[in-house]
Amino acid sequence: MSSTPRIPGERSMLAAMTVNAVGSGMYLPFTLIFFHHVTGLSFAAVGAVLTVAGLVGLTTLPLAGTAVDRWGAHRVQLALYAVRGAGFALYPFAQSVPAFAVVALVTIIGDGAFPAVQQSFLGEIARGADRDRLQAASRALSNGGMGAGALLASLVVGFGGDTGFTAAAWLNAASFVLSGLLMWRVRPVRPVRPVPAVRDAAAAARQKAGYRLVLRDRPFLGLTAANFLIALGYTALPVLYPLYIATWLHGPESLTGAAFTVNTVLCAVGGVLVASFVRRRGARRNRSAALGAVLFAAAFAGQIVLGTVRPQAGWAIGAGLAVIITVHTVGEMVHNPSAGALAIAAAPDALRGRYMAAYQFSWQLVRALAPSLFTGLMAVDGRLPWLLLIGTTLGAALLLIRLEPHLSAEAVHPEPARRVAGSRKEGLVRAA
Image 1 (cartoon, rainbow, N blue to C red):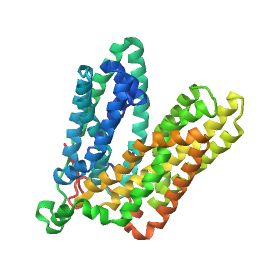
Image 2 (image 1 turned 45 degrees about the vertical axis):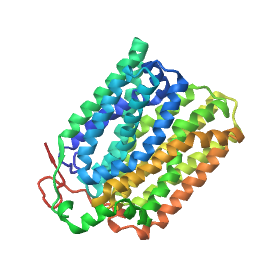
Image 3 (image 1 turned 120 degrees about the horizontal axis):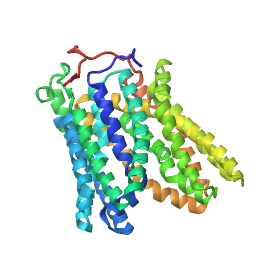
Image 4 (image 1 turned 120 degrees about the vertical axis):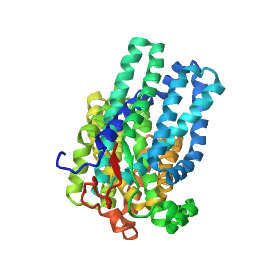
């Protein structure tokens, strides 16, 4: 790791990602319960507000992409840290439905836009294999931080009860403030090439075209479609696994927690190592992303086998799930860094914000559709959701392979990591 060239300010950026993940981990695993205790509102009211706010948040995602292209990812990212921090600081005071709706809407808009803005920022500050490396590091730190945040919240709530939930909300707000201060130390500078967008006629024309140019970029839309198909596989762990284990396998609820733990630990410990191995083998980004999708499909096929046999012994169910979740997690570690770096590299610099917003829309749409889709299929047969996921992930793998001739060489082949400090040609960032 020490031999890998580092970009200026990278340690501060990775620290910010870790703190951000710890804060998010303090409420995401038990969102409804968290907001019920923090605001005192009923579960029904909390659920209805979060659903409506989430749908409205989807419509505002394109605005985040436009803001990035106009003001830069760094500024928008800092603004989102401030918005999310203020939102969680205000949640304990939002004890009526209208007040909660306002705070939730603003905060969810910030949460929903943040991944696209962060992807844009990685595209600004890194080139070549550095993008793949930072994608892997970001994923690993996110998993580790989320696990640590969930554990910290459990301790705080365990000792403080309802007061503990309020403390967790304020700790989360503090985590966003601290993340913003750490990210402040990474300051982008103007690149030499291309000329600053406001003075570059071609870049200005692309800026004016906006999302029309994104919608005409068929290869990138293909990448977004492939991501939508495989994103369904990512939602299986938080949405489908708990329901499947409890209602179809009739296994103990503790197996759900164990599945999350195995996934989190493996991603945190092995994510960077697996991504580094893939880079050293010289794999093309689209092909390694396709391999990750195939591993997903293998894990989902294992669920169908397990759900058909349906062993009575608890240890047999646990052992089967352990193998399946391990294959699932390896697929995640292979797919995520390559797919993320591929999308970043396929986007033109002048419109990267809009491109990443369009790409992020595929994630957001899946999160909105998955709960009703999976529960509807589960009501018919517990194996049907896994059959659907095998089809979507294999379809995504095939699409990624077929897109290769239509993508630029820079997007498909990661260049060797290069140090950007002190070089005006390659330097896109500087330390504060």
